Amino acid sequence: MSHDLSANSKIGFWSLLSIVIGAQLGASIFLLPSELARFRTLGIFGWMIGGFGAILLTIVFSFLCTKTAKAGGPHVYARMFFGEKVGFFITWIFWCGAWACNPILIATAINYLMSFVGDLTTVQKLVCEIAMVLSLTYINLRGVKTTGAFEIVLTTLKVLPLIVIPILAFKHINLDNFKEMTPVGMSASDTIIKATILSFWGFVGLEGGTSPAAVIKNPKRTIPLAIVMGTSLVAIISLVNTVSIFGIISPANLENIGAPFAKIMVELFGGSYDKAIGLLTFIMCYGSLNAWVFFSGQIAKSAADEKIFPKFFNKLNKYGAPGRALSTSAMGTIVILFLQKSPLFGDKIGKFLDMSVIIYIVLYTIAVLAYIKFMHQKKIRSIYQICVTFLALAFCSLILFKSNWLSYSAVALIALTGVPVYLKHKKDGSLSV
Image (cartoon, rainbow, N blue to C red; front, top):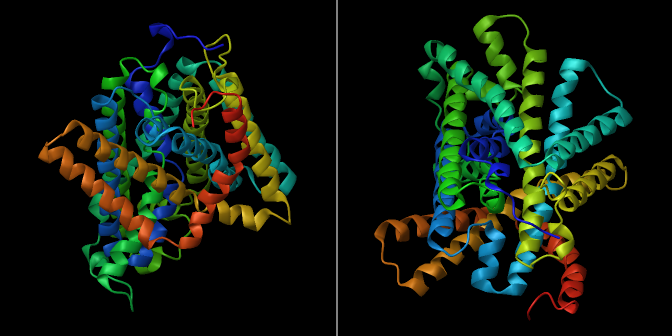
């Protein structure tokens, strides 16, 4: 059965801040500069809008955490404001998304690791991928204090180079690289919108810090501070690095470069840095995966505590970690890793995982709507809260409207897999109709 953790077994601000940064600052920072280069200089403006939208969403989550009766993730607020049924399926989508999308991160990590260790066969890749999942699950099974301390180390290792590189690159920036504002044949508005949607990949996971409220010291203060500050720092780090790369390598050339950080290291210092960048990227992905493993366990455990999920998931081990939730999430990720290697499912699974951004935008939209309902119920008239909340809703609506409508099949498919669990849980009498 579930039991409360002592204050000494909980994590504080710095651990949670590291986890929030770690979840967002992964492979995307290495991949986005080349992708945004397709949109030329306006790609940076689109990125700034994406970062601004992400910060708005974290502020809305901080409102939900401090103003409502509960501290928790999107699933808690979905149930509180929209009822048991909506609460269950939003939670199911949230939890499945937390572990089902991990193979994208894992595959990126192993691909970059190969520049350090050499090529691997398909079987060797699978073994390494499973080893990543199992090793991080083991660390998380040792309790939140161990997870938090480990994430502080990983986040420090990956943030330091991302601070040093822009500083060294500053005096080499060529302002002429920013003269081409838009790609040929594309309007400024289309360019900015597409760049905004693309850039938001770098902020998926911003809500993760809200889920482990039960294992956070003083959650109503710590969570809002950590998620807003963490997302803001990710936005600043990513923007400064992207501008630095654009300034040294023209966007027209950058869009054809698969490893922009390796190229910028060569431009700054000469020689070859493929191995160093490969190892750094692997560390960043490993740290991000650690955060997502942590979130997946806490989401299921929190949902079980709230009686949204079966009580099977809130069982804690001797270290105070949600062992069953973590193990189930790990098994789900490993199943998808096997499917990715299958000739029958490989391509389809990859495309399905690429739709993950819609999963999270749907979650964020529900959270924003929940706070709008709360403001209406409590007759809140704060201009600041109203402006932030409706700007966040406008941002989510923009991405939902402009995204490929086929992407919604991912949300529908995940929701369908939860139907048998919902019916069983409802039959057991744990859910109200």
